[in-house]
Each structure stands twice: as structure tokens, then as C-alpha cells.
Image (cartoon, rainbow, N blue to C red; front, top):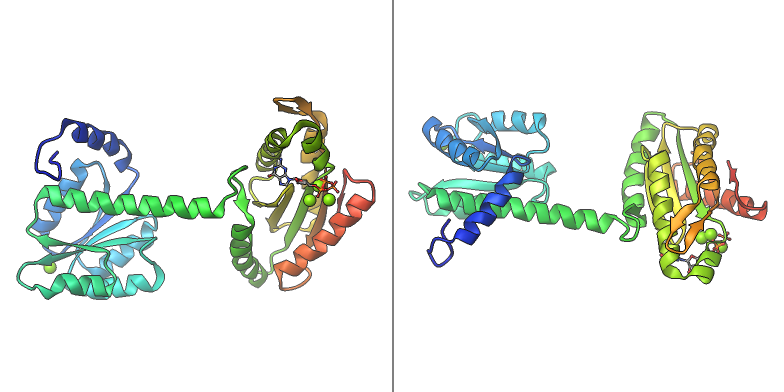
Length: 314
Ligand code: GH3
Ligand code: MG
Ligand code: MG
Ligand code: MG
Ligand code: MG
């Protein structure tokens, strides 16, 4: 392994080896009509343990990507039969931005404008043929790292830091689109707003840290019992649930085991066992807008609180 300064580094080589362990998780598509060049690139990347897919031209590449939607990086030649590299990139960029698919263009020294053109059409990077294996690795690894970092950032932005559940923003961004497609398919959809009872007392009695432990345990219990639905921490000690394909009667039934479990098994905290109860408002689709349905669930939640808490109303 050669460092920036051109020296061999044992430490970097070791790091590189440790990275290789994860490379098999990454799928790379190599699009190149020249068989010898393609074989060369494929062999080099396979030595790095990446999962490699191949295509001889743009059309084949599109087929491969349709079959393997989790391919994250594509290396593509320019001149190819049927569909060239630019047309391929242009088509792909209509549906996949660089946070979903990284593209490295393969250009040649004979046309100096090619590299710039690749970038203009939407490639992230380019590689001049012929290239050293070392440069291929550097560019591929760097682009894979970039995509991983972007995925981590996207995930962090959509989750609640304390509980790891989706946050309010993700719920609305995701629920709205999903909501419309469920409506078109005439599927039922129910939302529930769940709020812990007298949670403030737990904080007041035991402190915020213990309150946090209770919130985490509640999130775990929600995931265990209702993990197949979209669950979000809406804020504080309030949670949203979007249950696709489920009516409100069934939703009320599905909340029962969670209620029973929380009543029967106190949450183990650093301040000892604490029993939590919750109130819930459950609303089946009434209008086109998820906000209105949530508002309806909120009204029912208020009724549940007024009616003595520890109950779900649908
Ligand atoms: P009710 O049964 O009417 O819902 O009563 P409640 O005490 O649960 O509701 P209230 O809205 O009065 O209090 C909610 C409390 O939740 C107040 C707030 O300090 C606390 N809280 C909000 N976010 C967090 C958090 O992230 N951690 C902790 N520990 N407490 C939080
Ligand atoms: Mg070619
Ligand atoms: Mg509460
Ligand atoms: Mg309250
Ligand atoms: Mg509340």
C-alpha cells in the first residue's frame, strides 16, 4: 500500500486489509464493451472482495441495475454499442441522484474533453485509461466511503437520537407518500397517537436520566410488538404509528398485548422497576390528508386521557 508521499506503509496496508472485510457488502457495476479492459477491472476489484456485476453497453447496464437496485457504484466507459456512457448516465440521473448511485466515468487520454463531459452529464468522478491498479482502488474506495457517509448522515437525520426510532420529520416525509399509494390501492390505513401517562411524575420523582431510560424501553417495546409498522417518536413521550392495511378495530386489538406487557412487566431502570401506562387515540382513514387523520387521533387521545388514562380509543 503506497502512501500519499509514495512510501509503503504497513499501518495503512493493515487498515486496508481490515476494510476489505466489509467490501463484499458493496455491489459495483462495471460497464465496458472492451472485453480485455472489462476483465482487467473486474479482476482488480474482485481482488478487493467487492461484489461485481458486468455489462457490455448502456442497455445491459440498465437491466443489471433494475435487477440489483442496491448497486451503489458504477464504472462506465464512454464509447459502447447500443447505448453509450453519456446516454446511460443521463437516463440514470433522472431517477437516481449521486447519494443513491456513484458513477465513475472511464475516459481515455486521446480526448481531453471526455472527463469534463462525464462530470457534466452527472458522473461523480473519472478515471483515465490506462490506469494503475492503485488509482482504481483509491477512486473506488473513496466513492464507496462517500456513499456510506451520506447514507449514515441520511439515517441520522431521520432518526431520534435517544430512542433510535424514526423522528417526526421522517414520519411526515415517509407517511405522506406511502399514504397516497395506499389510498390509490384502496387499502385501509390507521394511525395511532400514543402518549405515556403521567410521565412528568417519573421525571420529577427520579430525574430526567431515568425518564430517558423509560422512553428507550418504551421504544423497544413498541418495536417488539408493532415493529412491522412505521413507528416514530413524535416528540417528548408521544409516539406516532402508521399501520398500513389495518382498520381501527384491528389496530385497537394489536395495541392490547403492548398494554398488557407494560402493565405486567415493569421497566427496569437504574432507579428500580417502574411501571408505565399509556393512552392512545386510534383513527382509520377519513380524509386524504394524514395530518387530518392524526388530528382526529389526537382528539381521541384527549378523550382517553379525560376518561381516566390507561386506555385506547378508536
Ligand atoms: P399526561 O398523562 O397528561 O400525558 O401527563 P404527562 O405528565 O405524561 O404529560 P406532560 O405533557 O405534562 O409531561 C410530559 C413530560 O415529558 C414533560 C417533559 O419534561 C418530559 N419530556 C419530554 N421529552 C423528554 C425527554 O426526552 N426525556 C425526558 N426524560 N423527559 C422528557
Ligand atoms: Mg468502449
Ligand atoms: Mg403524557
Ligand atoms: Mg399532558
Ligand atoms: Mg405528551
